[in-house]
Amino acid sequence: MTPLERTRLEKAAADCGFDLTPELVDNCLLLRSTQFPESVSIRVVGDRDFKLWSSAPALIEGNSSPDGALQLLGYGQLYSVLEKAAATARTMPDRVAAKFIQATTALPRTTEAERLVVQRVGQDLFRRALLDFWQGRCCITGLDVPELLRASHIKPWAACATDEERLDVFNGLLLAPHLDALFDGGWISFSATGEMIVVPSLDDAGRDIFALSGSMKITGLRREHLPYLAFHRAEVLRHL
Image (tube, rainbow, N blue to C red):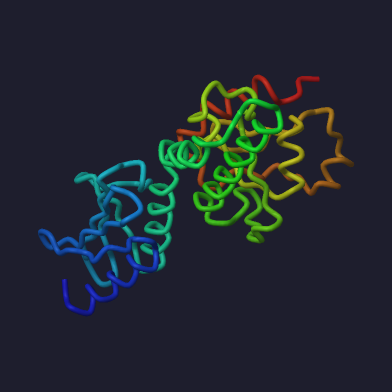
């Protein structure tokens, strides 16, 4: 690894949320952060090409080489993967739940009004986690105006058995307002591969109004989303 390559990789790491000074270990640059314990290692393998390993496989997804590394072509792919890895690490379900416990431990929960205050704290943390995980974009349309995006629970808040389930980032989709309303009302859902399912009772005119097309699907779906989506299809999607 040349000094110039190391400098560029260190800048990429800092830009993407790995805020501790990288270390060179076995010709790999080890990236770490003060915000999470997981790490990522990068090795330069060609002209602007890289191999990545993570201490937690969930942080990086894609086709890996026999040695378990994710192969990337160019700095554009590198930035994209590092940003997603850092966002995933920051929003691990136990971390969001831990923040919720810390923020609400001292809050009273005797009255309905007090319980609603606690719920709003959780929903705010959940929204921030989804904005981070989905990198501020609707996972269907790509809309990137945060003020317009909605944090949609896949398994509804009231149906969740624990706070960990309610605050699990994989129990949420970041959606444009019209898709949030349709999803929450059970007019649409998504298959295990992310394709949109529209209930037959929403006719062609309704689909045109909402600009729903057969090609719409979730970008960035993870296997951890699948149990929640199965619940949504079984319990929330309208079966008319």
